[in-house]
Length: 138
Image 1: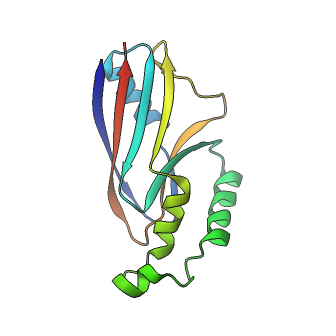
Image 2: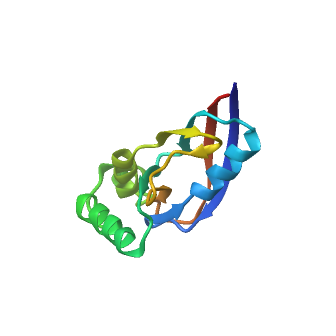
């Protein structure tokens, strides 16, 4: 069986990192499925998803890493063409990726003890974001 759901969240942008694990688990519970996989997909080109240990030190480290790789004040051809100042956000999102697939068993995500699913909004302004979940299982 395939069940599609959506999560909507309001974000602040600027590399905001949000633990979306409880939101995914809530939607999984509502499907009634017991085992299978869920694909998490970000609809947008300036955000991404991953898994981490969601703790303050690591959140700071991730933000610092992205600033080193694609600095906010860097020069981007995207900014020259569109003038929106978020070229860095597109580069960061490209590195993180827009999707993630996680197995579930006994109606629960099979994440490690210290592993959470994160949504990262890299854009340079607040946004309302849509995250698509597609559950496949039984």
